[in-house]
Length: 147
Image (cartoon, rainbow, N blue to C red; front, side):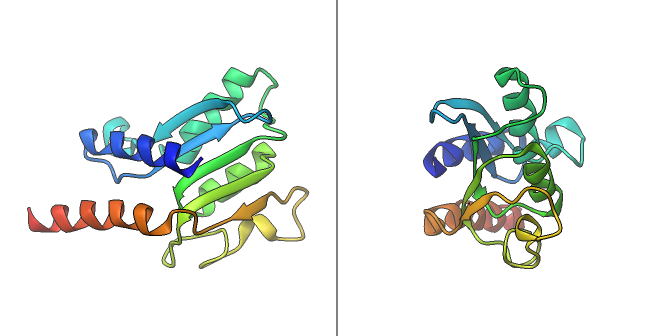
């Protein structure tokens, strides 16, 4: 699942966006939606890969906004906004690659998804293909700083 998110992340580089990818898989394991960061391309601060993938998956699944039984796979630990959107969409699990100690909200800086006060808490599997996911970001920022 994270490999599919990596493929989506690589498409972000074409638009100059940070290469983060997200894919939503249905309860049967079929891919419902794939997206990459598009903040620069769309001029939209909320156009994170996770938000775009969750929106597209909800539209495709046809069950309103609920993504019950679905899995959100991401290359990087979701931020507060994206973690909150995952909780509110009712995904069953979040699987991600690289930890993000500066903005991560699925265990690093905060742990939004495991807050017992919320009505839904997805399962979390972090650090999947972490070296590969982290390398993609490192390469992007190394290149960006050299310009």
